[in-house]
Image (cartoon, rainbow, N blue to C red; front, side, top):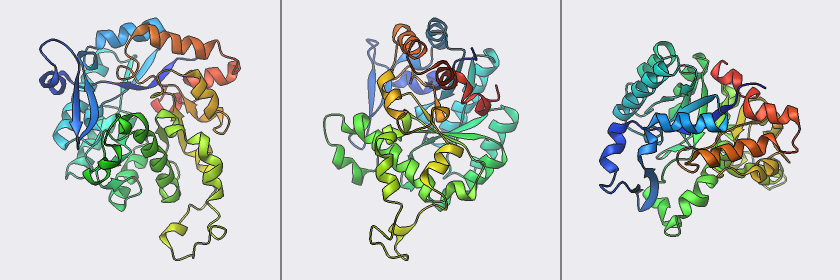
Length: 328
């Protein structure tokens, strides 16, 4: 059995968490634009808990990303990257951090170089949008170019919140975190493909979290909408823009989808496999945000191992499919 690699484990340095912890030890919620955005608790920085849960579940490697650094300021990104590097130095075989960047800053290129060459990080963590910058924005093209040159991959996590003008659509019921984030991941996946990002940067590899917002359920619809003439769109319309190849071509060559964000559901994996090739799915738990204890993490791994998916598919999902991304 190859190593079990968890592509979706979070952390945030204590310096950024401690100010948000309540005196009674209860969790606190960050509110952005009126929406619940981020849950603070001490498991975000107590790495002994990470290791305890990983050991009980049989997870060998955790790929680390920080919600505070995806869409965060350049200063916070630098702090997070340095802290992650320290953790990696202390546990080099267990934790593989991702770089965090602020593309709007003047220092992103310098920080990317440091993370790639000095820290040895294999990838970069992106939100599904950087505020008003979507992932097909021309502003991000130089960033993609440098990431591809560095031989790094991108892990895409839902943006913690949405701009104020959009937040009204998620006004109650915790709608954004529950279903809005999945919608954002579908949009981000579609924009990367239709926006020609993979046509411009053909060797770029991207891991979409949460099984791409359960995009497998609507891939048939997406395929149909690539026939722009059938849908009555004139060639000059921005709505007629599409990628050079089929949607499925980019899934097969550029995209991976992790199993995090669904509270450890084997049924969600089986649903995704009806449309997404098993070779494009990688394992993720979303510890310590949605899955927060060792028993739930262990149960998820066990259910995958004991499922009827077949030994080759199981081994691929749990480790082999994504091992090259982190150079294992």
